[in-house]
Structure formats: C-alpha cells, structure tokens
Amino acid sequence: QVQLVESGGGLVQAGGSLRLSCAASGRTASMYPMGWFRQAPGKEREFVAAISWSGGSTQYADSVKGRFTISRDNGKNTVYLQMSSLKSEDTAVYYCALDLSIAALSTRPQSYNYWGQGTQVTVSS
Image 1 (cartoon, one colour):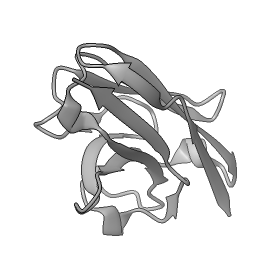
Image 2: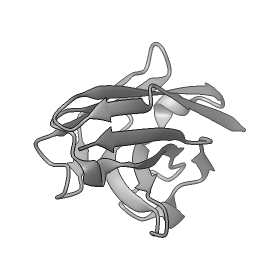
Image 3: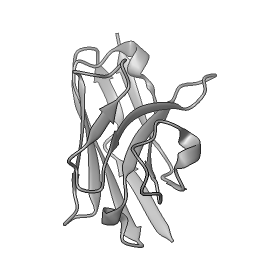
C-alpha cells in the first residue's frame, strides 16, 4: 500500500507562485514514476506533469510548460510541483498520483494506481 498526502495549496493572485508537495509513505514510492493532475469544477481530471523514479525524465501538459516544474526528493519520499506565473485557469484541486508500472511516463489518469486526497489551488485575477 502507498499513502500520498498533498500540501501547499492555497489562494494566490494571478502572476504569483505556489509550491505543492506530495509526501509518500508505505511501499517504496521512490521506485516509481509519479504525476500531478488537476480537476476544476465541472471538468474532467487532467494531466499536469509527471516525473520518472530517478527524476531524470519529466513531462508536462502544454498548458503549464515553462511555468510549472516537477521535481522529487527520493530521500524524503516527496514530489514537488513548483508553480509560477499562475493564471486564473490554473484554479483546481491538484492531486498527486503514483504509477506502479515501469512503462514510459503516462499522461492518463487510468495509468496511476494510488492517489492523494487533493489540495485546492485558487488563483484570483
């Protein structure tokens, strides 16, 4: 079993920054790829970013490329999402997730096996 706990969400003005954290416990989470997704009210959950187990490979949604950075500290079993130049359309609940497969990084929610409870990010314009 793996438990994922997100933190760092909040209210920020447009153009501001936030850093989300996702602490993993249980199974050796540092061995697996992890991702961030988000879901706005009335919309489907969408891919934001993913990172390989080593941190050597990352992938981003086009909508956040150049503004968000995903990273991980395997010694702390924690994945981060640094968000900059935030826009009102970034407002959503952000979820971290863990993928037990050893395949390439996935943008599909169905590929991920464990999910956190989510943290709200609200960007005011």
